[in-house]
Every structure is written in C-alpha cells, then in structure tokens.
Image 1: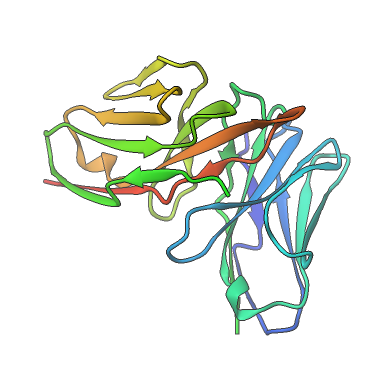
Image 2: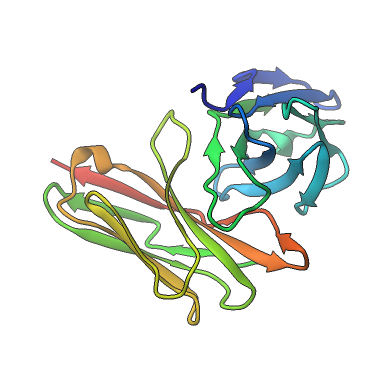
Length: 115
Length: 115
C-alpha cells in the first residue's frame, strides 16, 4: 500500500510570507502528527490531528497551525515566515491516536528554506 | 520540557563488530518508547515500540531492551553490516491525562559501519 506522501518536497519562501504543507497519510490511518527538524536539533513535535481535531500541540508559536480533513489528509500552515523556520518538516501517520503499541509511519518530508 | 538523551552522538564501527547505544528518558508517566532508523534521503522507519518494563524486542540482528523504572533503553546491533549505517532515534511517549502527548525524540546516534 502507498506510504505517507508529503508535498511539496522542497520549497523556498521569503520572510514574511506564509506557507502550506500537505500530508496524505496511509489509507486507513486516522492520526497525523507533524514534526520539525532543524540543524542540531532532534525532531520536535508540532501537533497531532485525529478525526479532524487537534489532540496535542507542541511548544510552537501560534504562527504554526494545521488542520485535518475528513479523508484524514492534513495540512500545516506557517504564517509570517522567519528565517528560523527553515527546516525539514515531517509528518507521520498511525492507525490510532497515540496508541501505546502503534508505530508511526513517516513521510519523506518537506524541506522549507526561508530567505 | 522532556529530556530524552541518546549516547553516543556518533559511532564508527568495523563491519562484523557488534555495538550498542543508549536512550535515557524520564522515569515517570511512561507510556511507550519507540526506536526508529533513519537512513540518509529516506524516511524514519520504526524498529520497535516498547511498552512494558523489562521488554526485550528483536528484529534480525537488532534488539532492544527497556527499563522504565530507571528510564533507559539499549539498542544492540550484532555483526554490523554496511547497510546498518544510519541515524538511530529513540522517542519517548509520555502519559498525560486522557492519553499520550506527541513523541519526544532524542537527537539520535549516527552510526557509520566501516568495511
């Protein structure tokens, strides 16, 4: 079956602009989580969506937002981009919401560069 | 802020040798501990999801142990092969209220297998 698909793979934006990233989870997966990786940092949790509702949120400013659609596809939006937002953004899907025994399946990520 | 530490940061190992590395995490409110392998230009791939103190998991030449009381997990690779070269990430899932928060990742152990 198809894996987690993230689009676009690469993106260059200017400071102050906004950006929307998309994630299509594995068919049947209802949970989608987003992570940010910057140089020198580990993967940092942004938020999790399950059944179109945000269930958890990491420690990021309000410029970072997201949503999930009825088909479980998710979008992440960053407004008023800053240079420090340049990062690899990964999304991960799983069958249940943070189930103890459920692994996360990751997409290949969107590499965002803010200039 | 949860502290998930991995050591060492990087490791060079001769082909055929065995190796291990550590993940330490908070010993309270434990929910699950995940291990992922992340090869360059690919997506992180789940190795193990561990939930019970004393858990031991094995997949081929790779195995992992879990001690939730003292807050650490070991990952072992027996007879390292060049294809084992990757960054190995552990991720801690904390129980809070009605469920678990997002995964908190360590910064990873970067493993290089030298032929």
